[in-house]
Length: 438
Image (cartoon, rainbow, N blue to C red):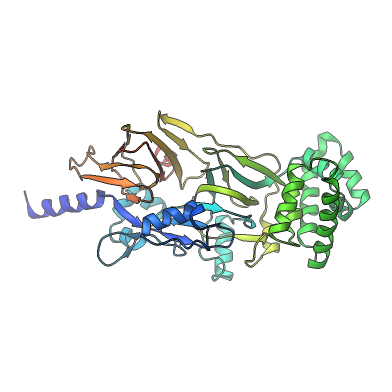
């Protein structure tokens, strides 16, 4: 064999070898405190760090974004995953490099939500470029941020605007908002002809929601005080609705915040473990409580308008929203085999596989044309990057446990066997539909 053939084979072998990652954590004040936080436990196991029992742990980041980069665990000088990929972009696969360049197109997080986090939306690509150019310290990149939240526990969220019927019901049952709208406009909205309701309702919704979000702090404070007094009296006589209870919860977490009123305009969703929602650009949402796997395009752009101590950009948020009405789709996933469920959002950048392996069971993740991230969230097992059709080199067997994270290059088949009572893991990769479309 010629020397260059040997070097090429070594390079191909190296470019196929999965690497362990050391990942970042965020201690935002809405996180779950101490060991109660899944993000905290995963970070401690992943990094060997101790958990501060008094500190909130909100997000465990896996990816290349500069706001929370992962590092390759090489045993020597730490190298960021982004720099490691840049040395040999072939680990991403040709189609991914052609489409997105020499960087991972998706970002994965584990969220532990102890109290509500901001009413927000993420810009589309065009707006992201504008915001990044105007305010690079606030909007750190020029990418869009479609995302999906996959529940690890019961998970509460607000997402998208309520339906036409629910808007009418809200104006009938929340006098504080009806008073702001005015008797005449409220009656007109309630009586609008059904056949003309969709277009007109969207205009009405945008007008009312904007009016609420742009109220002065004093007016909002007075409005919430009235709402709180009324609901505290009424709960002595009747069971409050879910939205009314939520408004009181939000007010207790963020006193005099417009978010307690804004919640009435948004769909309330409660996910069970294994259910997911996807959120496109310019869709309003807020996570309320619970823990989830969150996957998104590689971006950290967030436009906020309430329920936060971070800077607000209300005018930008109002101008970018789609004001689409109706309940969001709850994703149940598609079964790939007895142990694995795949979640395919309507975005090109990512898909998520959830795998629960009983003791001694094994599963194979076939080689794909793009990169993958593997996150182990419970149990113990064997992780084997074995044979592929184009490179008959066995890479060896690795013991894996909760908290471990791997970057797996393109064209690498992975075999996993559970050695504990149950092994739980998640795989994130580029949405497989792009390989069919390209």
